[in-house]
Length: 487
Image (cartoon, rainbow, N blue to C red; front, side, top):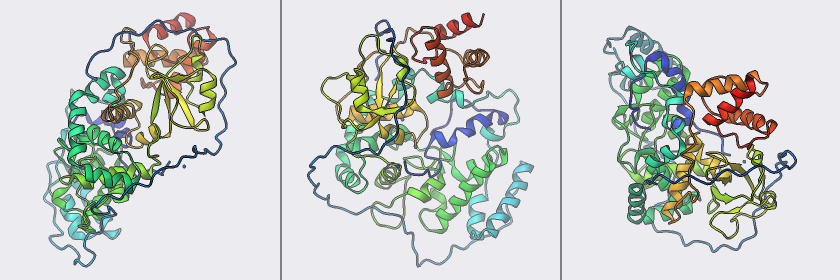
């Protein structure tokens, strides 16, 4: 995650900070058991069929198709693993205080209190001092300027932009070209990572591209200072302090040095943007030197991302999603967020838009997703799409990762056009839609201006009840229809 385009006011950080975990690989999560041309408009939307209301299917155990796979030949080179540091090294020593005062009284008070608590917890006093000495207030978190522009979740690119606008800057020809070069240059590394972690090289490269443009920009903040500012700001204090404790453990264990701990504006570190607790849980040492240098050594960073995805449930050589065609009069209310067996989707008439058959067997589960409604590209999403979202909870981000990975294999998408002609809603208009749906008895959830599953589901219920295409796509025509019914 890189520096935002505008500096938010401190009281506006509540929404932005609540998205930190979703905006990068922020905290360890339990394993699951981010093209240039503007596309032309798509055809007129199909009308829904008069079919029974779709019902979610029970989640039965999935059985993979029996396949005979040739055992890959091991690649020559080191075996990645957890960093060990230097177990025989003496405990780090150095100054333990006093701290140099900052110009921010609240920061000074917080630092004295937190450093005392960290020492009680057992952290090395010299490391505590090294982490917290030299911190200073950042306008990003602690601005006193009431006129500073405010930023919230709804302003983050993954949420604020139309999905085709987001993809235009995330999935680019330059990223495909650079990615192909990196895959060739680091072919032995990717060979080893695929074997060790069971994650496709193209997916690893796509994450690398989305996070730091293949390591070309890893952020120019200091993680300790950023997290200290976040703690002083107060709305995510517990989270920020847990990340600072993790930074101390990283240095104490010898996995990285204090000088290495650079980050982006939210505290995510290195070429694959790990928060400190994620680093402790998933960082990998590719070359066996005891460290996990996510900042300057790409193989360590890539091995760490592969490990994170693997432990989150990634399945090698399984699709993240398949763009599909639907028959005329398809009932779009089946795009309700529920997984169904692939055999069910096939029976309903869905087929791969590129022709041929689906990769997984009929027992695999998938969700029908309409990122831009019934007029735009349509996808069946498989488990790996959800794994992408452990890195960033945005659907737009996960789609970008999938499209980048596919493009690095030579398959560019989507095939269908985006409905750029359909007017989208502003944040205030989304709030109007949510409030009106709630007023009409359709539960859209909080009136927060953020389009989530609750808003889409409520709109779908309204559309179906009023004989409309029940795709749940939030747009100006949809808002007008809701307002017309509300009177």
